[in-house]
Length: 65
Image (cartoon, rainbow, N blue to C red; front, side):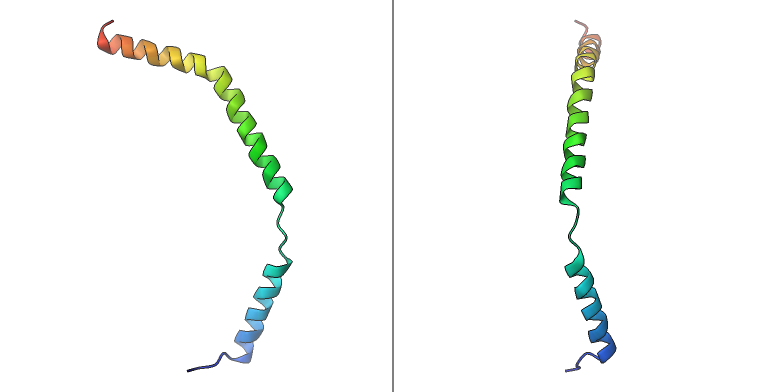
C-alpha cells in the first residue's frame, strides 16, 4: 500500500480549503429561477391561444373537417 506524498496531501488540503470556503449564491439562483418561471408563464399566456388556434387549424386541414 502506497501512502500519499507530502505534495499530494498539500494539494488535497488546498482543495478542501477551497471547497469549504465556497458558500454559493443561493438567493441569486432562487431569483434567477423565479424570474425564468415568470417569463415562461408570461410567454405562454400570450402564445398559448395562438398555438392552440394553429394546432386546431392544422388538425382540421389534415382530417378534412
